[in-house]
Length: 316
Image 1 (cartoon, rainbow, N blue to C red):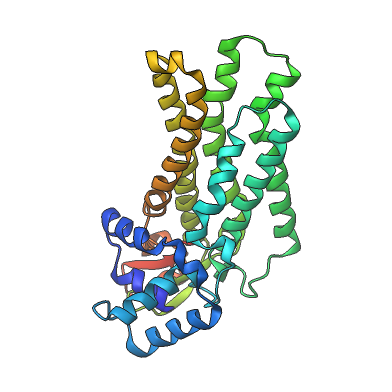
Image 2: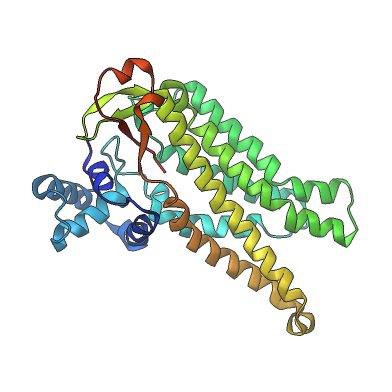
């Protein structure tokens, strides 16, 4: 079992402990580390083990957890590492929620956001579903289709306003403030399900309590994808709803009624803040090393171990 998975096997049993770990891992300064520094950190961990009371080992673990894929042992592309999610996604999310005057800018920003989301899901998937670590032609087409469909659907509120010439304030408010909330959550979950569909179709590697590989399970693959889809829907759904509620409340105050220009920066800032708070929270909803009961995996795997529970890498 990879050192990253061994770490998650012994840590992060509760939501609060996982949240604390993720708050430490998501330090953007680690993006400046070179591949050589990452490899040195991995070598130190293999040599010394998970000695968290050792400051050097603790720093090495932090770098490994944030930069190395637990299935391949290779560094993740810089823009798709967990600690890069906020600085890259925040401006894309804010721009996609803007009340655009035309359909073209809405489609552009949705395309940028959905492309990054699909790339992040692909880079942080469970790679044991594709041993060569390369997407098949089918998977490449599915990813392309996901980005295209999500772009069009994400821009649907603006398309409705423009094509139907919506002039009613209440209808425009519904399209701009209410409709994006379920759309954001559903599209985030949809992207995870489609981009990581190979895990459900081919299965992912499962381990016993000692970290020994038992076999490949499609049931574990589906569970891993489902949990990640729920966490991503929670992330984007909450990020969409909270700023809208805040602006709605502010509109009722005398200060906002006298200074209507303040609503736009409040919306943008609150979107970035909520996204920043929800990233570690959503990553912590489910364990990185998930559990599945033996009776829930394939029958051919049940006879290979005496453990009542098996473990799998959920991905991110």
